[in-house]
Length: 192
Image (cartoon, rainbow, N blue to C red; front, side, top):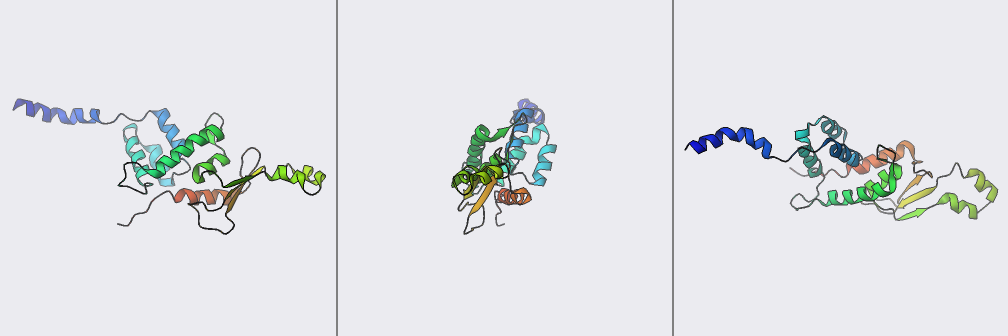
């Protein structure tokens, strides 16, 4: 009987220690950087304020909201996104802070484009070569074409994203809005 009493008294002290260890700060910052394209403003606020003990719950809730198959053992949206993140890390990370450039963010959200064209180089083979040379600095280095991306509304022409030679978008605010709309499609709304 005394053992039961001791266990009951120690349970509130021992139970928090048994739970998963908190995510280290460096890992948490890396995760926040990796999912930044998908974070809603409310999630970003919640994540930046989360205590070390609550970080795992925040991460689990984040991916649960994006799981198209909640009954499945693995979240296919998470698996696909994390694969794209690993690929983008190798190709599109910039600087010490490890942020992706616009090419990287586009790749992470939409995946591999259906076609890539280098219009600056192509212009050297058509028309006036001197005009092409003068315009080279003003032209985009490449265009990524997506015929039917699953996260965008159907378009007969598909979608084209233009980037400079250093992978900055030429699309300006419309580019940011379009990628924001893509990010919003990751959140799964379920019927009550």
